[in-house]
Image (cartoon, rainbow, N blue to C red; front, side, top):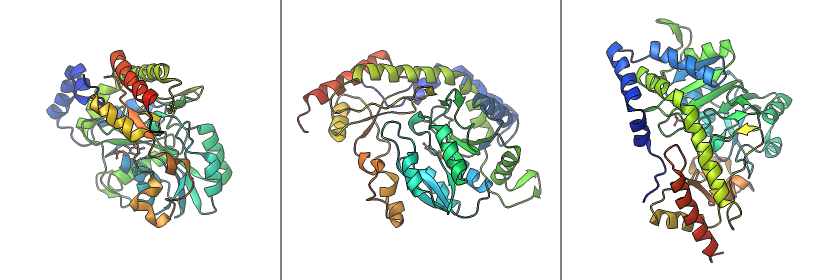
Length: 370
Ligand SMILES: *Cc1c(COP(=O)(O)O)cnc(C)c1O
C-alpha cells in the first residue's frame, strides 16, 4: 500500500460534477479575464476570511509583490522569517527593499519576535509574518511589535486559508494579507492564482490598479502597473471548492490529532506545537528528528511519501549569500536538516495515519545511529 503526500486527482473525483459545471459556465459565457466569476469569488473569499476586500491576482508571489508596492513605503528593510518559501523574501527584494531575516520559534515555526527585536533598525519599514505550515502567528504580539517600531504589516497567508488567531481569521490583522491558490495549497486552483486582502478601501483600490495596468476603467491609466489578474476559470473553480474547505480543513485537523496521539513520546521526535485559542489548518504536518534523511528513506521504501519544507533555510540559499547570514546562529539555520513533512489532507485515512505512525515508531525506536 502506498500513502501519497498529495492527491489532487482524488479530490477532483470527489467533486467532479461541481468542478465540471464551474468550468462549463465560464467557457459558455467567455468570462475568461475579470467578469462575474472573478467578482463572485472575491466577495466569497473576503467573507470567508473575515476581510472587507479581496482582489484576485495571478499567484501568491505576485500578491506579495503587489501588496508591498501598494503600501508605497520609502525604500528600507523588511523583516522576514528565515524559514519560509523563497517567495516571501523575493517579493521584498523585487519591491526595492532589503530583506532582513529573523529566526523562527522552535515550537510554532513562526517569526520569533525576540530575535526580530535585535534585527529591527531605523531603516525597518515593515514586517512580514508568515503563517507557515498553516500555523497562525501570534498576531497580537506582531501588531504590538509593529506599532512600537512604526512598521507596516504584510501577512503571508499562502499556507493558512481558514486559520485563526484567537477566533479571528488570519489575514484580517495586518495592513494587507496575501494568499496563494497554487494547486497544492489548502484551497487550490487548477493553475496559478492568488489574492490580496485588506480592510482598507484605498489600499484595495491601489492593489487593483497595480494588478491591472494602473487602471480602474478601460483606458484611464493613473499609474504604471502590471498584468497580474485572476482568470475566470480559476475563480469559478475556486468558488466551487470554497464550500468544501471547512470540511477539508477539519479533516486535516483530525489527521493531525491522530498523528499526535500515535507519535507522542517517541524518542528523537518533536511534534509541531499548537497554541491554545488558535486554529492551525495543517497545510503541512512537520515533525523534527535528528535522523531525518534515514527516516525519510525508510518511509519511502514502505511507499510512504513525505516532503521537506524547506530543505535549506532562506539565509543559506545562494540567492542570499550577499547578506552573509548563512552562518548566523539561528534555530532556522540549524534545524533545516531535521524537518520532515508527513502526508496530510482529506485524502489521508485513519489506516494511513496508523501505517505512517507505525513505520515512524518502528524506525525511531530501533534507531542506533545516534
Ligand atoms: C506558495 C507560497 C507562496 C507563493 O505562492 P505562489 O502562488 O506559488 O506564487 C508564498 N509564500 C508562501 C509561504 C508559500 O507557501
